[in-house]
Amino acid sequence: HKFNHRCSLMMVAEATTTPSDQRRGHTNRAPRWQLLAFALASGGTTTTRRCSAFTDPRPLPLPRVPPTTTQLFHWANRLDNRFGSDDVILSDLAAEQPQLRPLTRRSLLSIGAAGTTIATLLSPLVANADFAPGGTLLDREVSIFYGNPEASPSRARDNSNVLFNQDNYYKFGAAAQWIEPGSVDFPKAMPFVRTQQRYDALKKYGPRASAAAELIGKIGDAGSAAEVPERTDPAYQLRALGLLANSFLASENTGTTNELMLARWYINEMYLRIGDYRNALDKGDVKEAKACYSFLGKATNSYLTLINRSITSKVGDPFAYL
Image 1: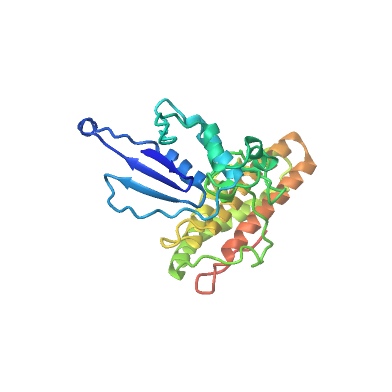
Image 2: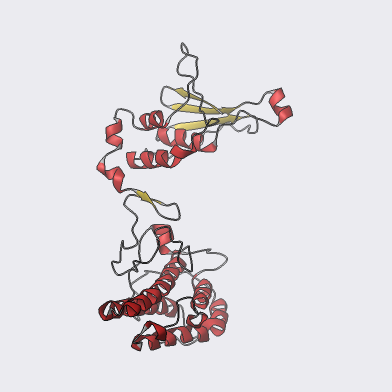
């Protein structure tokens, strides 16, 4: 693609292919991220695409609100390591200056912040922005404790040491609040899932979920780590809890919902807190062990409360809390 920046209001992306290139299967095609970067930097202008493969020259709509300096900085930061010898954007600077020059990260930032300086881009606000493990750009720092200081400190920042990677922290870069047993205040609404689907799932996984809650209740009286099974022990039935949540909080129509990710976060906290509890017992730290088990119970009850909200009289009997 060759980009022509005209009066800072119109950018035209044009892909050309010479006959020799066609025979070799090559095209003068710039990387897609460069087109995205230029489009975002134009802020509210219109981008027209003209390509041999497309005959419709209609303008492509862009966001009316220009990207913030925080977004520009972090997009550029993410792209910084992607610059290579072939990653060159060609731009006609002016009619009297036809020579072409490569676009650098510095010039990319300057385009998006017309009338400002690089110092403005590197403001304190930028330093707080971050990406969640799932790639969501946030205007704050990602933290495993954000939203709930009682979350397990054992969670890896990239969410790599949990049972279900795609959970609440994966998408939002934050912990979830606890749910009081029987409460319907959070989340505000539940996804629609057919009664038959929930009925079948409860019949299949209900006994295993009850067994998981029962075992977690029993280990609360443990006096040593030897009395607590490893967190990977199948006796905890944690994966069955995930399968139950899949059938209760998502369907073919909804896909992976935020409520399902929330349930997975609670299951992952149960998994992590079992390990924290064993470690505290192994060190002989009674106070820490008591705190870890308390948080384990909160995670378990939060999960059960979330599931119980979808258990009606036609589906079955709700689960008992710890």
